[in-house]
Length: 161
Image (tube, rainbow, N blue to C red):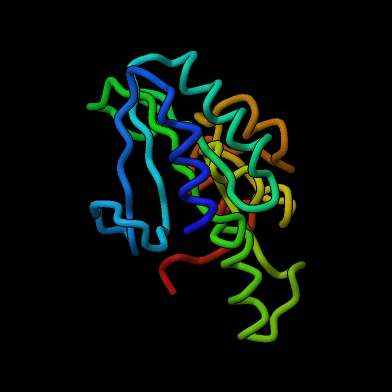
């Protein structure tokens, strides 16, 4: 709640944005409760990049912001989207938790990502990327594939069994 309030205070002086609040992936009205995600929408792409940078710099230990731009994930959207989530809510943390529960070593995990929100996961697990990913994503990948089928073939995973 305290962190959410600080983020909202930071966003209050921004114009040309719409702020949406989420609790367990359901859009809600904010009344000071704990949030699972804050999403910002804007048509100003430079503003989106600046907000993403600022949030990551100001709240680096508590939350992380990921910006997605039109046609990156949402083909019918003209908005840039910035999702702000807890640093404990990332994909890499979720994978770590599952590996611990199953008593599996990190070296046995395979990750493949194509979005900027996958960068931490790809770094953590020496993961792969798709050719369609942004440059920042491909830069951290240990290997880049054209299709998921190519990645599975490389890993010799038999999807039929």
